[in-house]
Image (tube, helix red, strand yellow):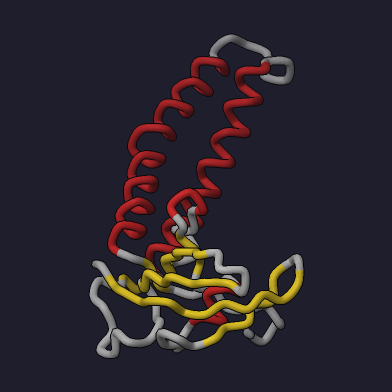
Length: 164
């Protein structure tokens, strides 16, 4: 936690996650923002701006784009790219693919990634999530208890592997 009581956000990302954020920044800066700026200029040329929906909406879009650009620039500057497995690949660290089994025999597979890469469709979980925090440092055959919204759930770590 920082001095304001807010929990710190992990600065880690995979090379793919960093690339995706960099591509978004470039798209917003070089393509989207110029398009919206031109649309606002065109709308402004039509006359009365106070009742011009295109102008008002365009200005709102520009504020949103600029806000996202500031966030991306700040985030990209603080990110640390993790592009190789840790020295001890028998333990769960950032970037690990982890296979788990619950008490009912259900199997789950997750990859621990940066908070900007979280994607349930790919089974990517944020390193800042309760699940990832509970898994970090564990080894195969270790039991992990995770506090989830529907209560505590116990898992056994079945396997760990890394692929960068």
